[in-house]
Length: 341
Image (tube, rainbow, N blue to C red):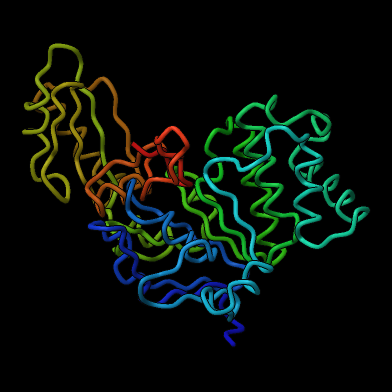
């Protein structure tokens, strides 16, 4: 049994008809660590989470949770994990407290223990005052927090979070980040998918980037940012000034060619050491008589990494790896990563 790693995946593959959702994915999460799973919509993130959470069998490869096989020992794995999907899976006709008590009873807790655990978690996610209200009266953010609390009822050793802060306001998002940090400090292993690059930067010890069902990059936020290049000097021209003239004046100053965005009058210059070139920049502007309306020196962000690796900008959540089960009217239900077309 693997005692050092909470999550291990080796060669995981999954196909849905003509769509290859996963194509040989490998990853490992040490116990007590936080892994951020990034990728454009449809990259395979939710499919991977479903397999690791025993909800979907892989076509090939293997995966283990705390040394237990997710296929052959699925029942034992389920007793070790918690899962919070992108869309809150709560009973709209039960109160917040009743939802958590029900999960507790299904997890094997006695009546009194289930009630105590429900009250603990309601306080943890700041829902104590709304505990007696039925869930259909909750806002989307409150339902997300209730769903997150439900994933913690059985005190999981491994927690899967698929777009955990979707629908939360900034205060709720910061609160959940704090809770996730506390869980990791207590030894809970976390795997989270997110489209919010700031969230991945704040929470994850390691990052894995998926694209078209394959792992295309792994590493810390710092190492991945280094792959996106050095600093960027952004200059905005005053109204009426041609940014191409500014770009020509900057030629040879940076580590690459200036990039012009004529629509907004912006020139972006890649540089290895931004502060060191500022005196030369000032000299060139003075010599040419050109002016700038705004100047900023920017470090690479995970958004830059995402764009460099996948060729796409990060998007807000809302696209599925595959459609959910059909409703009675023939339409498709939402899945954990988005809504079906």
